[in-house]
Image (cartoon, rainbow, N blue to C red):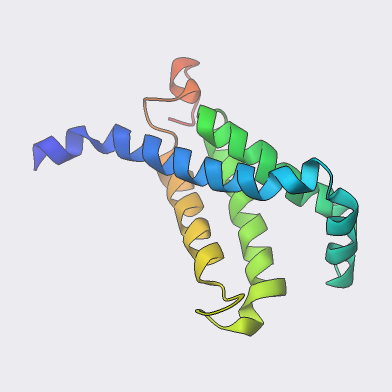
Length: 134
């Protein structure tokens, strides 16, 4: 079992890369061309429109930070909040599984929560800079 324990840094790297790639993909369309439509959608949910910019930053910028392993816990917290709001305001009414269900955002939130607790691991810029995100 010690062999598996030595692979934990690699597991954290994979979690960061997977979550970061997902969030970059989700935020890219908002940041580069779809922001007005996203602001309108967020406003339609009863949330102030300016918060769409925070969500887009959490998704795109947070995704980049996660891939790099830079201020990982803060980026993961932003992603977690983003996903919890998405579940509560958009997906919950559709149930856990099926079209528009909250199973995927819940899985993403779970990965983000794990990174908040465990940090970036030693294969990250947080570790290189001696930050507390390790």
